[in-house]
Image 1 (cartoon, rainbow, N blue to C red):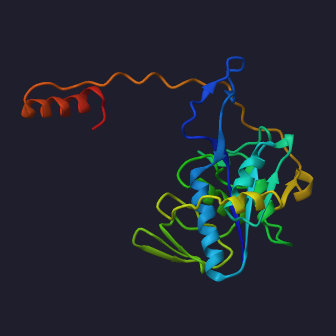
Image 2: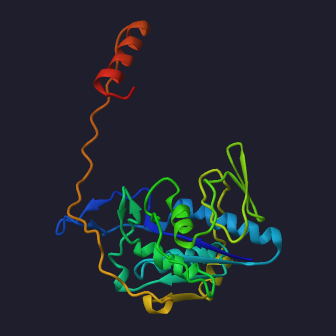
Length: 261
C-alpha cells in the first residue's frame, strides 16, 4: 500500500505575520519560522500508524512550493515518511489555488499538479480540482477528490487501514484508493527522534517540474491586489455591579454592541 500525504509549509503559529513594507501585495518573510502545518502532522502520523499496523507499505510526503519547502519535507521524513516529492518550479510561484467557486470556472493549478502526481499510470481523467489546500474546512481532501475523481470522507476522528473511518456517528466504507482528511483529535503526532532526523538526510526528495508530470503552466487567473492588516483588537470591558444586573448588562452588550448573539 502506498499512502501519499499532501503537506504544506506554513509560518509557525507563534509568528507574527506582517505585510511587507515594500510590497503591499506580499508578507514580510523576515524572521518567519516555517513549519509543517500542524494539521498535516496528524495526517502524517495516521499514515505511519496504518503502515506500522499492516507491517508493510510506503508513506510518501508531497508538497508544492519554493526551495524552503524542503525543510518541511525533511521534517516529514524525520517523522518516518519513506520518501518525498517536491513540486518545485518558478512557474508555480503564483499558481492559482482557487478551483471552482461561486460559479466561477477557474483552474486550480496547484491542485492539478498534485493530482497529476497521484494519478495512476494510464489514467487520463481530467486532473483539475475544485478546491485548493490553503482554503478552510477540510478543503485539501475535497480538492484531491475533485482532482483525482476518487471517493473521500468528511474529516474522520478515527481511521482504519481498510479505509473505514468514523465521522461523528457515521461510518464510511470506501474502496481504495481513496482520499481522507485529518483533523485535531485523530491522533497525537510523534516527535522526530535523533535517529529519524539523521536518517532523513539520506532519504530521497524528488524534485518534479511541470514537464515531468505532463503539465504546461498557465498564467495565473487570480492576482493579489492588496493585503491589509487586521484592525487592532479593542480593549476588554469589565461589567461592574451586582451579579444579577451584571449578567443582564453582559447579555445586552453581547447582543446590541458586539452583535455576538
